[in-house]
Length: 408
Image (cartoon, rainbow, N blue to C red; front, side):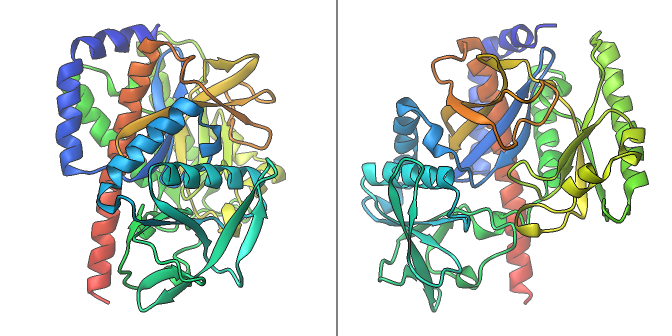
């Protein structure tokens, strides 16, 4: 089964209608400023497995990707042309690769005319942090003066770009009504998102798209379910997870029979509020869940900043058929708004095609000029559907946040 051939034939002959379909949807649900989409490509399907509103990794973009990103940033921030931009970053400033990414994001903004500074929440003083390339980044302490954010040195931005996923919630300095726009919104942090909620929206919009263009939604969707009120260390909810895994495997097997796929199905169990590849294990049966060893249960104890895992998403495992040299790989698509800036890949020489590649030891490469044109077309459609789903998710989250605030 050649998924590229199947989807290419459909998408190519309907490309004008597909472009119009997306234009109509994005006119109703404007895309979030920044996002990245992790995609898995198997022989039989191409589907997003994660979408991030606050991507790092800009340092991995090649020159073409950087120039595209600059063009799209200028387009999306046109109302602030030649204005002041403050990038608010993560607290893990000892991660030199992350600092590399922030420096590239800052430089891209500066290159298109924005006066750009970098700040951090909960700092006691201004910092100078090192990148992996012997560079330095000034990270400034922030102050909130009656809803106007500025640095302690007096830099007052016209707009704030958030590059912090707020896993632990909105920092004190960013609370309350703010007079400046914050992009992406504070309320889109992981403290307020759930992967299961996002993929529910993706499944719905992918089904609508596929019904419109005569595609089986399974070809571009990872099946999933979720379980709440779990604790892997205490053993709470484990039986429900095992049962959920069996139910999901049964649905996957039905599709494998339909498409004559002989590979064994498997499932990823992921923290519902997870990021950075933390809180992930894979299983091939419900019995595997019941027999998880202490090491794997501890993996599912908490995510970033020691936030406990109390809810998980069960996601269809998709074996990647992508390679970078001798390493298994998977595409990562970087978007500014709805515009695709770059095709990256994550690769890992210590992992198999069935495993999670987002672990220490993985590397990244710009694949702009390596991806075949027919594959680019498919990745762009799947990625754009993922971005559209994130825009719809964002609209739902912001509506709920607005309603909550109005009743406080």
